Image (cartoon, rainbow, N blue to C red; front, side):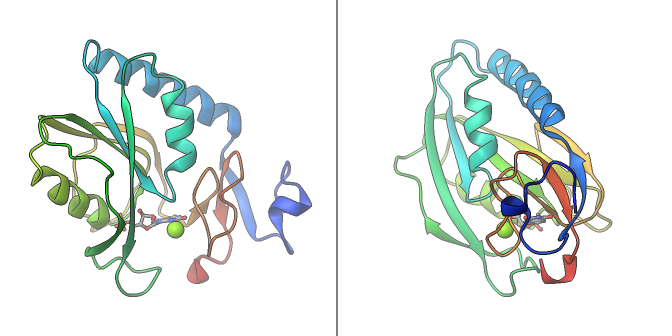
Length: 189
Ligand code: XMP
Ligand code: MG
């Protein structure tokens, strides 16, 4: 098991391989991203779009480091096909509550793996004619063969391993961990 993970959080028998990014490191980086993003949108009123469900914790922490006028919206998406393989075509489960035409949009994502989900979302949002469209992603995997997709701010570049915690899940579990850990049974991720 991983030190610092309570038995209730960790569930049966050491499914977490190791802590990849501890809580203090996450919080420091999110605060830094907040400062940079606040500077970039000074005097504007961006709309932040969180991609559910994975980005909800990152979004919640990030906005508390943004002392600017802003709006919040969410989209829920799911990939077609197998859960562990991304086809690049995502189904919109919940669309935005409001139009983004003419708005400064910041898409808030949890992770870039193959990059296909983000690429698809950017296409969908761009067609709605926002004034600007930028991306902040907490984690970006160093993945051979991943499509290169624009991320304006990246929290951490991480190895190509399945990770959980801080909003990210394995079959719905571990989203509540305050740190990022490597999940042991990656094939079942
Ligand atoms: P890509 O970039 O491959 O990512 O389109 C698609 C979605 O897959 C999820 N994903 C993960 N979820 N741990 C997770 O909990 C991971 O290591 C991981 N890698 C990809 C995530 O929802 C992403 O948006
Ligand atoms: Mg997931």
